[in-house]
Image (cartoon, rainbow, N blue to C red; front, side, top):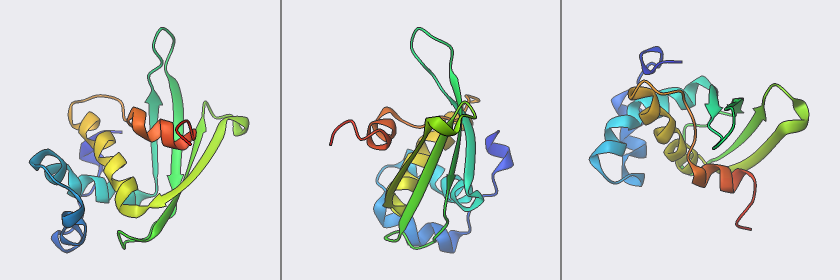
Length: 125
C-alpha cells in the first residue's frame, strides 16, 4: 500500500483529533492516519532483525470519537494461531497509524512502532 492510496480525512475530522498530537510531523500525517483508520485495515510487514520480515494484516473497528475504544486485531503470516488483539483509545491507535503513514510517505513498507508491538504482546504488563 502506498500513501497515495489513502484518502485524507476532512478538516473537520482532523480538527477533532488535533488536540491529541503535538509536533508538526504528526499533525502533517494526521489526515492520512485518520483516512487509514477509516479504511479499517492495514497490510504490512514487520521487520525482524537477522531474519526475514513477516507479513501482517491489522484490522480494527471504526469509531470516529478520539476517546472511544478501538479493538485492533493483528494476524501474522496468514496464520490464525499468530493472532493477537488489544483494545485502546482511538486517539492512541491513530497515533500508531501515524507511524505507519510516515513510513509509507518515505516509500517504506507499512509497519507499526516497537512501542505498539510491546503493547500488543503485553510485554510491559
